[in-house]
Length: 208
Image (cartoon, rainbow, N blue to C red; front, top):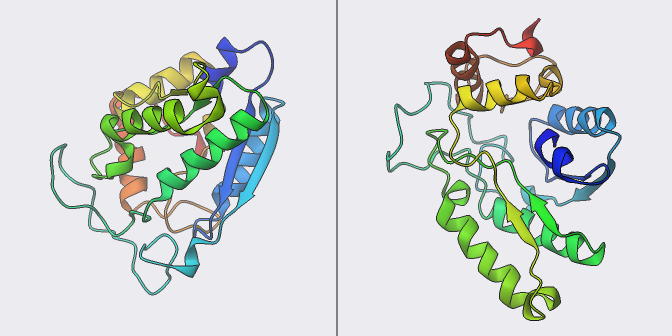
């Protein structure tokens, strides 16, 4: 949101999805970040628990705590992948943007998080840019909504450094997959976050 705010004339519209995720703390954190930037905040209700298939929405599937992958290119897609989640999110975001006459959708996907999610990769985003150009009124009229992914090629440490440069409220951000009041410290998301702050050479303000 800090990056989008620098390029917009006014506060951005913050879009949050309540999709039945077990880490529901992120909903409160998202509201806090939207408030920090004085952004209009729209919460979209989508109960993906109805079809399951992910450790993030099905309590019968354990969240892995054995450590994140060792590097890009690993074939396995973890059980924390939510089927078609970012496809749904982007479709809704494009609809909201078109309805409100907004010119761009900003998304914080990151292809270099070693988790292997297919809907965080550049080719996925490029495919959705084609969707915006061919499947929306604005697109066929020659003015497609832009999809911006400024962090897609950044390392976790790069993201931390960028956040510090922009004075982003990193203490409000949340990564833990397990939920609860404090991060578990052992799930893949917590491990990747910890490594990012360590590589950036700074303490995680959310743990202070």
